[in-house]
Amino acid sequence: MMQNRAVFVGSYAPKEEEGIHLFQFDQAEGRLKRVGGAAGVANPSFLTVDAPRGRVYAVSETGEGAVVSLRYDLEKGTLEEVNRQSTQGADPCYVVVDASGDYLLLVNYSSGSICVYPLTSEGEIGAMSDQVQHTGHGVRADRQEAPHPHSIKQIPGTPYFLVADLGLDQVVTYELTSEGKLIERSIAHLAPGSGPRHLDFHPEAPYVYVIYELTSEVEVFEIDRSTGGLAAVQKLSTLAPDFQGESYCAEISVSGSGKIVFGSNRGEDSLAMFHVQEPNELRYVGHVSTEGNFPRHFTLVPDAPYILAANQNSDSIIVIRLNAEGMPEATVDRIEVVKPVCLQVL
Image (cartoon, rainbow, N blue to C red; front, side, top):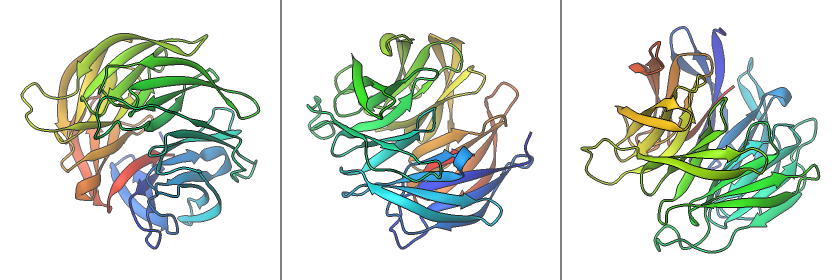
């Protein structure tokens, strides 16, 4: 097991401040140490790491959205901008690189569109190759007055991408062509007012787990890998039975073993935990406090027994050690970061 790993943190910060942070994570001790950062990007909320090229891509979640490529040097602890492109939309909030490494894809939350860009061998973001506009609205006038795609993620081993649209209560399947175009293949229509936000996949079986921001639930879907279509299987609450008050889900992640599904609750301020009885059957087994306020994002450290959780409204990141069964055991570190909203481990 590697002794140290790099952790990139995105946040809500003005462009004059270092809103992208680079940490070194000591896997033996479970400790984080800040080694560098970058200013110049307003609200660099969501990041994705392109390890083969040594790049990190950050959205600028503003009314005039942008996506930025940065070159990182782990030894020097530096991050330098390579280039940026407009997202031709407002408030981009999620960005990924496709499995081939040829294209970068993102979603504009407020303007309801999905964008595709080619990437050069040097990690420079090319001119947009496609943009797809969602239309319509959901049942909640306060949050679903328009389309609000919140995430995009590739179904492993396929050319299909799933877009969770919080505003439309839909998960839309697109096929990415070799020319960088998106073709709509199917739409999963979800419970009105549920607000799908993020999703994650079982590491082996054809199932995806979708978390609902507005109803604090997780739903299991079987994937038709030949078409990218989804079939609903099971739905559960992410909240403790005795919880009272408002809470909104954010991130969801499946352990590398495929045995545990975690989801974050902003309000209950916890990580919900589900045991995977079978890939198509979850069982709620409890929750653990994130010891802060509004856990917008968290990440499991690959091949190491830790979860890192970002508490946006209390300006903290905590490190939770997991036991042999993959369940939270103890908090081993806490650091201060202003408005952390995304964690990516290299």
